[in-house]
Length: 367
Image 1 (cartoon, rainbow, N blue to C red):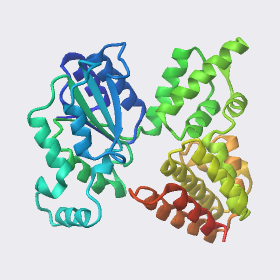
Image 2 (image 1 turned 45 degrees about the horizontal axis):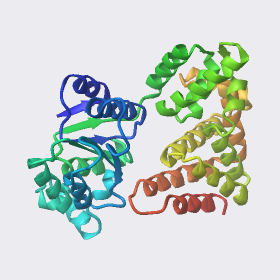
Image 3 (image 1 turned 90 degrees about the vertical axis):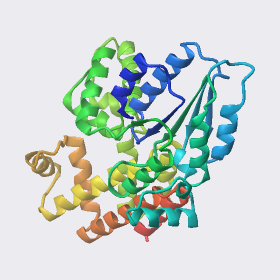
């Protein structure tokens, strides 16, 4: 049975918890709501540390996770075992190549083709441990594009889990509506430009929007005001994603390798989801390329041009696009977009180190 985040919340409110779930998709706001609802339903509002256990399939094997599920706890009669990085269980090397070849052949994949871990999970779920709920969680890959085949492999691997909960990335419009609802609930008012900047600065992440609005609520209370403007946002979120990545674009345009690597280190230190950061960078390059090819002059022309095209563009954003267009030639922008696409593919692979991949990207553009 497959659920969306909302339908899962309705389901768990009416039904007892199952022995295992498979959570898949990159969106974190809905995932956190579902996790809290499941834990409260099964363990109660005051769950102990022993009752909620975290593992990762980057560090443990499926056999080790299932051994823990079978073990009886002396301190908790009921447990939720949350297993992150579920994609780490997929076969690698020759086994992965064989599975991929079988997928391309269009044949139905057998349990053995999915690797021993898949078989072990299926065997466990024939007689699961009473009082234990397993949740296998994968948030690395998208549902569309180049990640689609990887997600399908994951689905087959965890096919024994009776319930799948999907968390596709929220569209910008939905994040914007959610931001408005959260702001209203927090008792603050954001004008259009401030809302644009908030959504942009949080990488269109509902989870990060929620965190930032809570910060804005505290700020508004100390100022005894409800209105929050662009200047307040820029001051309260000095390391906002748009600010840091725009500085990275400028450093790349100047071929300032040292500054670009310093800014990359900042992104890594903030725990930025790097494919999203690259997506922002790609948008910046594409819009700068459009501005160059349209022969635009100045931020005001950039803003007017994109607004006529139906693309949201506020003044500070238009200035960023114009400065990027001035820093790069059309050929450099096209080359940059090619490198961004190649880097994005490398980041979504399970093996390469993210820092190495991004450093190679910076070195390539500043060569």
